[in-house]
Image 1 (cartoon, rainbow, N blue to C red):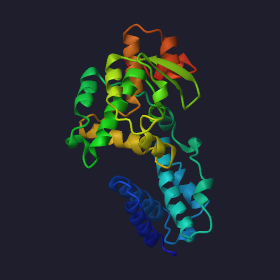
Image 2: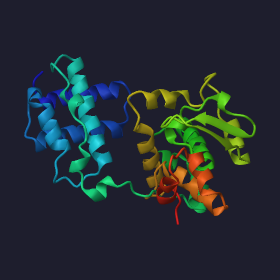
Image 3: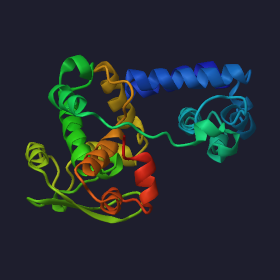
Image 4: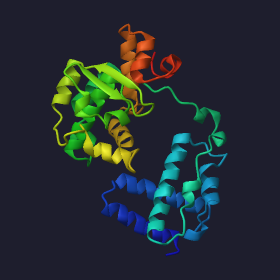
Length: 283
């Protein structure tokens, strides 16, 4: 196999066999096709660390760090497939990283995420399981997102910590976890709403609340669920929020309720209260 076009067709077919979503298949095809077109590549042996780096880290590109990383992940997946099939001798994509120096300053800075207002939170809580907003996703995904949303807003935990929650973390009054990002221990109060939602989670695993999501998050689908959540929100007409907005909502609520900045920062797992103040407490 020498042709990028033919290899991409096989790659897309395989994505379908292993159950990748139509959106994932479409995104990968788009990014790899665009890469090959922009760099004028037609054969697999023309894909090198240099051609990938030149495309991902183009100085004139207006794209953000996150977008560049997503594009690179698409190329890495494609090249890994070709390597496994024996069509390439190595994986040049593994040598490439996003060069932040080439990203425009405005695109480097972390944008302050927006909090859900109370009406939005209530709407998401009441409607996220509606097939109209789930689209082709199965009903159990709606159950997961309902629980994850409430846990995020009520505790401020990161998505990665939520999908790794263990039943042993829970008592009738608290959730205690060692956070994934900086291995910090946080103990958070269990609200009545949170307790009710957690009690409604169907236990399918003796250890983890969300075993399937944990497996995929720790595997090769780290960005699958946050992107999925954002698409659901857009169907709801909420276009300026992401799952990270649940953390901002938690911090903003705590601040408005008179919570001390130092305690809010501790609950969020932040080393600096400035991070909390500047990026997590909405006006």
